[in-house]
Length: 168
Length: 435
Image (cartoon, each protein chain N blue to C red):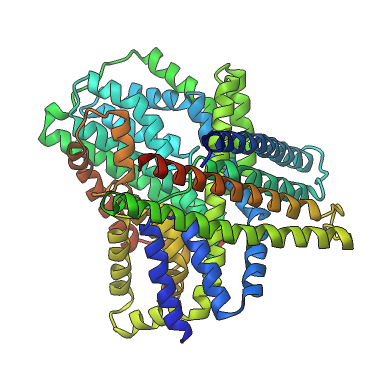
């Protein structure tokens, strides 16, 4: 495997996930502001901010799906590691590959279904109840986050295999 | 092949994947997806995957997760934990074992802004451990008080464990938060008693701290008032019905950022790091919930939860003996497994049994969280013990495990008291929301 790919790919993925995480951070700040404004409007202005829930929910989709690739890239998902020492290098390699390849398969399906749903919602003009916000962007963000997770896993698989090659 | 047999194979695959390095959320997602595809069809499984993913990430209730995590992370980044610990230390540090008790109180106070036991143990540990070691505290008592005190993060609202339990069982987050208050205070008191008993038998383990003049003591209180005010506004707001839990979490996060900025304690780098940590932890927790929501329909189709429930009740053990078996099962599981993952994996099976036995689901939520807390400090894989060890790497693991033992006994006492007197957990939520 070309050493250039081994170093360039993770760097590219790292930048992409961190870039998307900025969007997640912006969504988080927006959520706080929306919550505070809606409470202030309700109590001080006696004027509930109708439909703010819909905006907050859309921001929530951005927050989670834009942060998920970063979380995956940093390998922050909880794992049981009590048998790691007993498995040996081949057992560990098998475990790492099986999990990543299966996850690539399942997340690719999720990406595909989300793209179809976004296209469908766009075509039929599906909107939310109160603010009539289009719902396709939510599914598009879900597809983007899930697709980037797939790329992260592909990158990690390449690195794992390359490191195995180098050790041999 | 019968659905039950497929379900049993699914459980075997789940544990196989988890033991072979697959993150718990992905193991649940993979087994749930393929299991559903086998029992139904492939198309329905992909539809389930999309529906559950979208409904989870757009869930209004779950917004409390990032908001409360941010509240805790910003408090930690701004060094507010130091203020809480200093205030506790100023008032009770002079007593025998006072610094260890102050660590417990500091943890309890910090738990009211943080839903994570790891964050609580780490934040207070960094402040309290050097101080206790400087004054010659026994390593076991010092580390034990921080490791055990940190577990209060799971019990005192806002608690990540309660949020997960509420989402999986469709119980009210507000009710569960309120149910955690008195047990949290009770456990804090029992931890302080545990410190006192240790020092009673081994006075050299916890020497008296330095005495402070009254003015200095009052100043520490003044310093911690704003953060306590935020706790009162956000959690108290839920109690009096002014805010929903989502609003309380957003208001709390907003106020703590404002306080940190106004006091000049939050740099851009600090804010960035706290935000990145929040986003990472939130994405991880959301993905666990997505995976649980994909796994549960598969398990429901296999009828395994129902069969297990029937099996347990058919032994004729009686409600409390069955509860004891369940608690024992959790204690054993907690020794080896991550606490949040344990809740997510077992609740779909255990919850229907608890309901069938006639127990209050809110009360059981508190029992569950206490048992999960025990797992956080119980050997061989007590997460909080490792967290404290990371603060003081020179203290042997065995010393810390010995040090947490009195606190484990205190937890057992709290558990027993709450089982005998369910009102301890139910009094506040029932007075607010009715029975």
